[in-house]
Image (cartoon, rainbow, N blue to C red; front, side):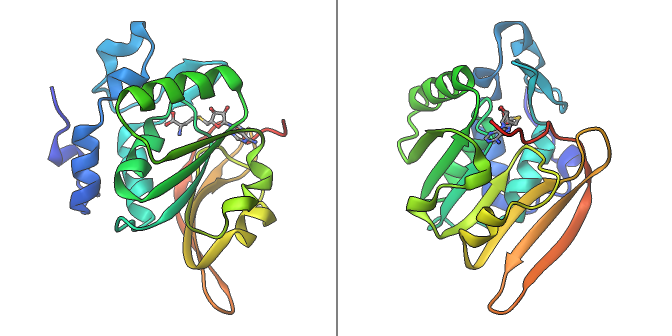
Length: 200
Ligand code: SAH
């Protein structure tokens, strides 16, 4: 089994395509879902959380325009699947998760796969991770009601942030924010549905 290029036509960045085909999604899934590894749908990972749809993970990664030298912040480690994309395509990854058992499991899987450029933090992503700022890219995989100011502050000039924004039970919009010298460029990508970014 493998991903079909025809089903992923919006993936034009070869490095992202390669990551999609290299990262073993099954390793991030619970035993009962391993058979669904190649279904392009979200799947439960416990604690009311989900691993995102692979085509969306790949597309969101592509939106960050990573070339290999970046320092990236991720909010919502979850299963660690998205983290693996970032670890392959950037230089250093700082990832924050609020649910401890998820963090521990993700870390175990990512370490077993040999990723050694990932730094893990348990806590709420609303504050970001100031000690290592600024970040060239920020990936948010849970939806806050509005863009957290701390994350904008911790984004480098020229940096990109991909973030779903909106209410828990309504339509959320996926944005790419580009921090320019005097303004914040905000691009609407498309409507999405993510788990809420909780205050923990
Ligand atoms: N990128 C993940 C998707 C995980 S779902 C993957 O590929 O599997 C979103 C994750 O965000 C969940 O694990 C949830 O616990 C976490 N989360 C929710 N609110 C958060 C917050 N305030 N800070 C950090 N993580 C949070």
